[in-house]
Image (cartoon, rainbow, N blue to C red; front, side, top):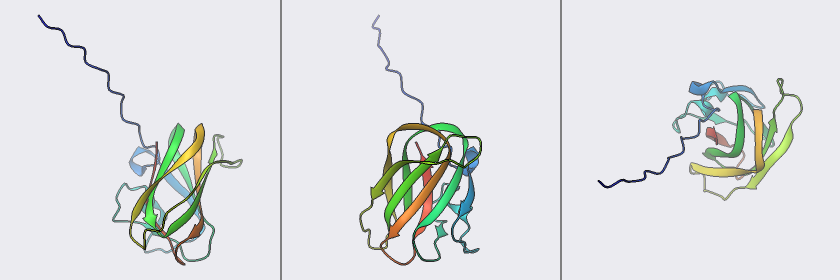
Length: 146
């Protein structure tokens, strides 16, 4: 009989930022009740959070559990500069810069960008800082971690 070796497939990474996996938005620097912050973690691109002007804008996310972060995918509009900060402590107090990126101009269309961490880092809290935008307002439709 023939014997075949089946390669092991790595399990898919769990996105601990998703609301369904315990992720929560703890704070944003602007609020429009029509577009609540939790929309960023529902996994759907149709719903979103929108800034209400001026940069920088910050989003603080508590992951469903401590996880090793390699990159963050951010789906949104008018995002130009993004910095990632992480905290591995039990309370979100001491953050360290873990990545930053200059994003291309998508001309107001929804775009997904992968912001890489400088090194793999274990975090419980993620701060996404929109340092600049291509327009006065920016929207974030989805934040996912891997």
